[in-house]
Length: 146
Image (cartoon, rainbow, N blue to C red; front, top):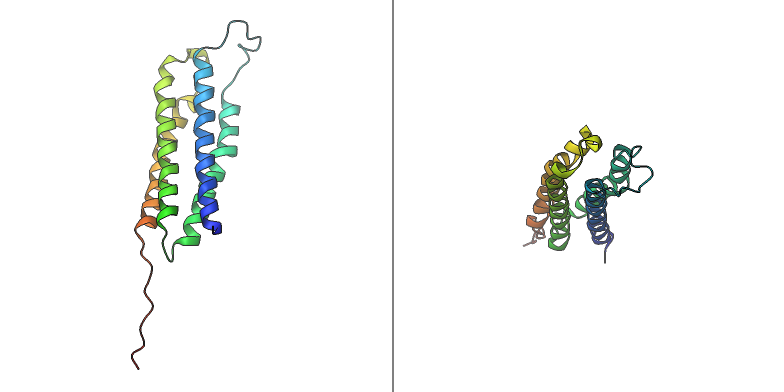
């Protein structure tokens, strides 16, 4: 496999990891155990920032790298993988946003409320880049008649 395919595969994995991390922290906030000794000191903002920097930032860079490396000749598998990464992020953030209403008011901050919306919106450009890469056809070499 070429480097651009490996970059697309890694970006899918990182998009899935980011979605899983965000879903887990949101479900944790919905039902924090009563015997959890740090329940009053728990803040989601640092964890969300950590998940963004570990998961979605490198995933976006790798998806962009895959696009840049294969934009001249186009690649259906790379385009499908980038589109898949965008869909994974969209679905994960939709699940997180559906859980926001169940989180107790003491854990709700601006980042808890608006990060899923932000990344649902940002999943659209990722899918568009994958679709553009999916539609590019290889350029035919010019025939020399003489």
